[in-house]
Length: 258
Image (cartoon, rainbow, N blue to C red; front, side, top):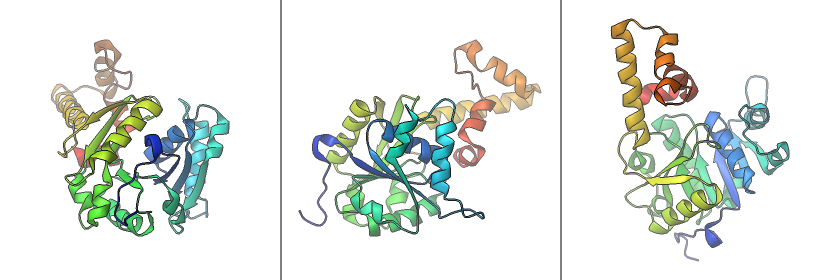
């Protein structure tokens, strides 16, 4: 195999996946992939001030999560945890998913590390909810850019059907086809292919709707409880409504997109 050849696993399967970042989304994506039989390496920063392994702590949170992240507790055994100090698992991964904080420079720095550790065939994606795929890929090699795209899962990924795939200008068509088939057939999701525009499709609409409600809330002097009462199940939307949805998304993720 040539050094820069793109290879998607046989039958578009991804037997071994590495997830970089064990935050709200990364840990849940790891659980989702473990549920369908993947071996998952979940990596994060090496530890907090108490020396606790962040990735291991995230798996424990997923085991206690409601709604449940794992189909059964036994499926958590497919998730192997580690730190960013040892990126050797990336050399064995068929698919590497970056899911760290929604900050362009932080993500770009991590992709530099991924490129140095990944195999020549691994598919690489970012779970960004709206950052530029072109900017994330800037500075990476041509071979890396051919294997790189955005794959945006929604929270909670086990229960949300939509997944956005965002090709870069250099992404190989085979990579997009392989990811699409795997996500649709193995994960049971509905894939929408998006252009590389700010916030893609869902968040471009969703953030506008949220900000519109917040402006109207301020103008009308409505309370938090009143806003969520009239923008949730009453009008056919999820019970998370507007402000509960902001909490679910996380203000650290929502603020940069608005």
